[in-house]
Length: 337
Image (cartoon, rainbow, N blue to C red):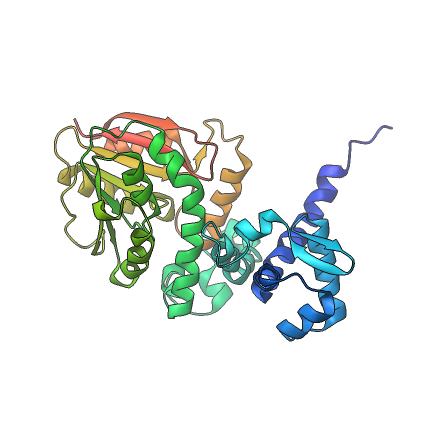
């Protein structure tokens, strides 16, 4: 009997080892240290206060993963590591990797229970009450790691999201829960007549200020503190919500969309940056896995365009359009009639 190719199954068995090796190398500072100067395993172990032989195994695995190169016993970063795995890089994903290592990886160990009970695994994993968001803001370091991670992902997607539809008719955008401001910055850099306001919690907006200051559009991007569920929303003819709706159950989504709809003028728009499932839910795999991630982390999930259309039209929006960007996040645009 001819057996099916076992490679897909064997690959999946190994995949968590691959990601964990990268997570640990980032966490230990391997790529940051090698970015300063290439080093042997022994020299790097001395710099990081680690054991040389087990570190060498990790370094060799990173060579196999094409993250490091190895010549004459010296290890150095590949360009992909310099760009995405070093904390000092403007396009770093290190913050999101640290979140994945410290939080997501642990939550996923309880996926079976999440499937059985249909609820997030926060208390089971960490033993304290509150939400994942409370955890991210428990210390200044945790907050910066989270915001740095979201910024790294946002830099990859936001330029494509704001270019997915023409936003040239809008003049004032409010980016609700805008975090580091990457979406507002990308929009103002793309559209020279647009002004934007990053609207987020008071403990977040100082991080946004720092990123805004580095943008050529800094004069047109401002910040304001507030809670979009509790407080009155600022004036705008375009509201943007990036990776916001997927965090919440439909009751909260409907309330927030209705609030945005009431605040918009006639013809005003709403721009969503979310990962879109295919209508038949057969992919993409990144959205399917992210939906499982939302199950263990939050009360939310990923949705198809038709599901977002139903939510938006239920709040009074029309002309709901979606665009796949080829980046981690897709784009959805609708308007108030």
